[in-house]
Image 1 (cartoon, rainbow, N blue to C red):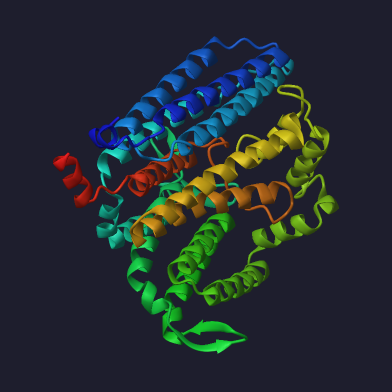
Image 2 (cartoon, rainbow, N blue to C red):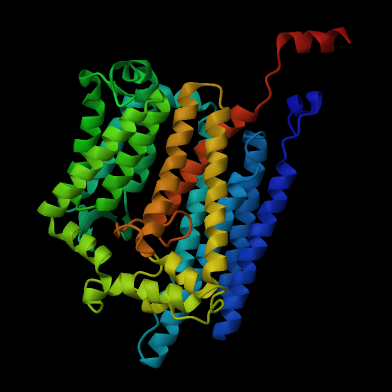
Length: 458
């Protein structure tokens, strides 16, 4: 506890955070044990990795207690719980892959769960680095334009010949040595900082209303420029990198931040109109977008072809029913990309509607706490940055889960903290570090001069 907390008896609730972290780790270990018990698998290396992950989580908690003592005590444990459940499912799919290889008398593939734990460690270290480097989130406003430039460079870095590569039709990855990384995941952090810094300066101008249509204030035509620029930027991502999910994510985050900055519903309506127009144009112009929409509308028309993924996902949810088949007792390996795009489908089969609802509630809690930090912060830049980072997590979760449940077309994004993928996990832990820093500033008590004088007089 800091000197300030001791002097004024302010509760930092760090002990509650510690208890939640221990509880999250125990749930992850329990899930791992259930997987091993159901699949008759023995994984000493898994236990070593789980213990290492638990130790690193405790170290992270210690750094939070030191560097951000007033931060929300629920944000980090909830993210850790999601991460640990994801590790258990990745381990379960690794076991299935090894059993299939043994049945076919082929070499067993390298387990992905250990690499994911390594990326988890990298993410937690970067979370701690963020808390050390960013002593005050308002410092980030000074690098608004630098953040925008860095974000654009990161986003289009895979287009460079010899560096970028195409995976599943989208050019999002770069190869450095033996590692594959998706720089667009870091770009969403950098561009959100840019959006916050840009909008906090222009918010009063963008909020001006010239006329009203059906009771809704319409902004001046000359103020629509930033929205059109962001729309064209999202289309450029779609055209050059063939990535529907990332373009939708960035445009949606910008619209939400623009609405929060100005309070004008007209921006949401205009943005929604542009989204419909861009969707129509993309459907007419790009074959891969047309395939995604056709699969969304008629998945069983080509159940063994383009619709195979979504059909298997729906079968998995149906097989899980209300309470699921149980850890290690379903067939989630029948769904392609079950570790990445469709991990919620795999979890839905083995945990059922009850389990997937619990996971969704964890996301709701995480998003609510991020939004609470945005509302409570005392400066407009911090509020915009927090709501932008929270929207990144919320919108990405909605896009992914909506896709695998056929609520919306598939986009190819990963589920935050759950899915296999180091790029996404590292970026999400950086987002978590920034949210903890903003939350610490929002929850820190203001000690006025009169209070200090009263204490001196006493």
